[in-house]
Image 1 (cartoon, rainbow, N blue to C red):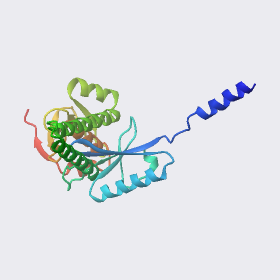
Image 2 (tube, rainbow, N blue to C red):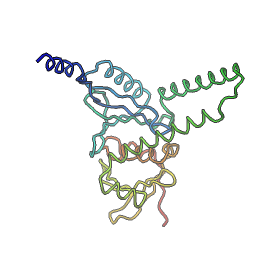
Image 3 (cartoon, helix red, strand yellow):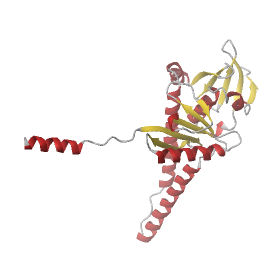
Image 4 (cartoon, rainbow, N blue to C red):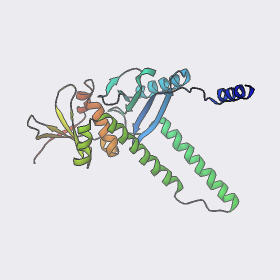
Length: 245
């Protein structure tokens, strides 16, 4: 009996405590795809306060915020709540497509680490590894673009994902107008506006989105066009050109 009690007590001590589960995430889009992410966990008031502060700061700088639910269209939001889940922030029309302050801070840390390595190399007489900083930046860009692609695929339907895979494009329906747009995954960040027969009527060129990586640009297009409050405002910054094909 004593041995059994000891065994039970041992099991009770080794049972892991229930950790706070992931409640939501803010993803900020920039020139490197997803330039920064901030997560908050269920029941953590500190996490929620930090997320709310970042949300307010970026929205004050002209960023647009969207709440995203798996398998559903995004919706534009004006305020932060821990119950929102996934939130994506995109720069506004008047803003340049620059990475947010969080990413700039991360880059400065990497630069400082690079200077420290160079100083140590000078002291010890060893040459620093060539291309380390550039390789790190390239890795960051690739990681940000992969994250943007994952978010995009999570928003699309099965038919849209199949079209993207097979034809490098997919169609979305404008939430406010009902117009069908074809988003192209190759070449410049262009949007084809289709007529009722499905033929290309206009080609819309988005100058700001041209600075973004391909999958990030597609994600920005899909977010704005599928939200009734932002479709027309987003397209107001486009250059319309009649399709000559």
